[in-house]
Amino acid sequence: MANQLDIESGIPVARSAPAATVGLGMPGYGPPPAPAFDTHHPPDAALLADCVHCGFCLPTCPTYVLWGEEMDSPRGRIDIMKGALVGDAFDASSVRHLDQCLGCMACVSACPSGVRYDKLIEATRAQLERRVVRPRAQRLLRAVIFGLFPYPRRLRVLRGPLRVYQLTRLGRLLARAGVLGRLPAPLRAMESLAPRLGRVHPLPERVPAVGTRRRTVGLLTGCVQGTFFPDVNAATVRVLAAEGCEVIVPRRQGCCGALSSHAGREPQALRFARHVIETFERAGVDTVVVNAAGCGSNLKDYAHQLRDEPGWSPRAEALSAKARDIAELLDELGPAAPRHPLPVTVAYQDACHLAHAQGVRDAPRRLLRGIPGVEVREIAEAEICCGSAGTYNLLHADFAHELGERKAAAVLATGAEIMVTANPGCWMQVATTLARLGHRMPVAHTVQILDASLRGVPADELRRLALDGPGTVATATAATAAATTP
Image 1: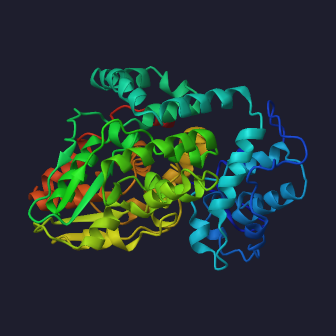
Image 2: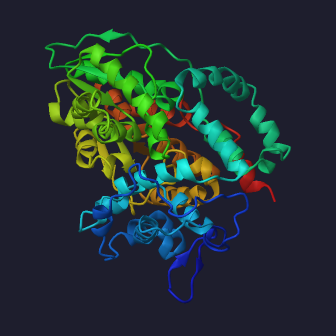
Image 3: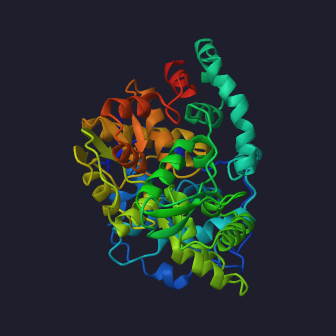
């Protein structure tokens, strides 16, 4: 990815910098009147005061790394929040800087003062969602995203037409005709990110542990994970059972609320959270296992989200205490099933909401290194987000492209055979970017590598499935078309 250079600061500036940082005319915005915040959970003044502007967050912030713009850094956004808290009105520029934050939480990991930027941006986004009138096109796009992706049933309905689209290779014809390249950026992103679909084999509601039962766990199947990556859920169940866990897969699961919560859509997020709590209370499990980083971080935050509701707060706290990422749980339990050799080199890509939001970094690496023959290679700039960030690669597709290219280059530089990650958004974002750049690469979830070892799957078969199996990059994509369309 070629960057321009800001002569004054010496910081490489991405090609998107003019669009992201220049010009305050944003027609269609209706910023709230002064004061900017209402009285329902504005950003906490004490948390804002924790920021001492030391700058340790700057090298880890994706938007600052791209553009070198102070107001697109965590401390710059904190200044905007401070001003709003004392009565300043938002202008269109303020809204833009806050919207352009990916919410990756890398700054939380980097901050020596312990600034809880995650809580600050969450509270601010809820304020924006209630009080800012966005341009009509943005409102429509957000309505489509949040009316579709958090609803597993609606996604399952979409699977049929999408699979026909892929099987008929209609996308390739449209790409050759130049149609895909002329679509609006969000639609190009949706088309290009859609993974290859295979058959879905429903999971049993109860799977007994192999050998001595060590734990009874419930599996959150997820919206995108369950619909577009069912093989990951199947591998998760097999691994858990092999490691001595009785697995309960509750029927009629709903969205955990992660996408809604991270976007500030508080009522929708709380509604989803209550349903998940009820679902796993009825299941009667010791642990709730999650294999999507964004979902896991959200479940662990239920106690905070439902803090105002006396009837739900203790139940939310109990559910949060039971939530574990699949790698986190397996690391806690320790190995029980024998591992077969699997001679592959893997580049482990930290999902932001696993590494930064949950603080789970070592467990996945220990699991992978515990497999005979697996060599784990580290990715440079591991702390920098790939650009997926929930819905960011749909709402800010052009910026996400640049971050995806940065991450793809870092992955390729490892020389690894397979990229491994722990979140469906990261999977789609990086795999699609690699394909767009002409470097298709096998991609797998951490649990799929372990599953292959436990079942004795040959390395060549694992590589084949990770390159061309379900969940991998579909053939002709809009991203490729966009890259070749003048």
